Image (cartoon, rainbow over all chains, first blue to last red; front, side, top):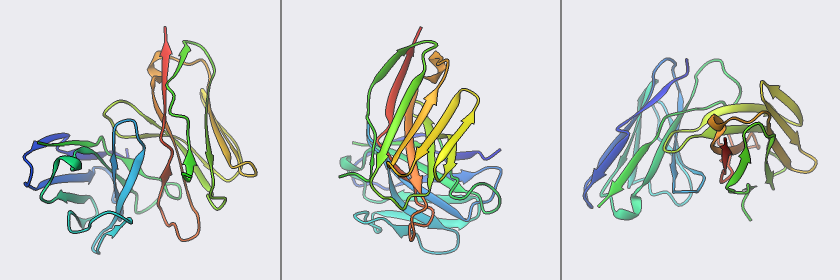
Length: 118
Length: 113
């Protein structure tokens, strides 16, 4: 149980294009999902907290107009990187917190999406 | 100063060794402490979850939290090559922090045959 999927797992795009990444909780409902990015040999940095049916909360320094987050259902959140540039190349990981049950603050992570912008 | 400090390694040990991984933190308000294992190009997997100070054991893994020293540890007994991964500590629960996790940089562990 508690499986989170991400799609795509790997994407290459041209500079200036937009890329959408999906995060799905497969066997549980998640009112809250989180989006992280991770650079090589570095830790996960929280980008934003996504709440179903409401606007995402972005961390300081994260451009909300560049990283659009939509959490339209209890099992799906999407991150769209708009007008991507090479510096946006990174490993993007989502996590989901079960709406019911589980330990406080427990999050289940997806397998990540590797984005390469040429 | 980072909120959570973790030696990035790499740490290389022979199979069967006891591994000790550690993190220190500066925010005394953290209440929940977690250890995640992350294989290369994969998402983190929760290994241990501890609330406040004390020890917790699960199979070959033992987590220790010393809030007075702001220091947490993960011990792996009888280490196996399959334990080779990056181990991330994470913390949360400070007032106003909601569900946010603050991660260490991760320690890369290699268990050799």
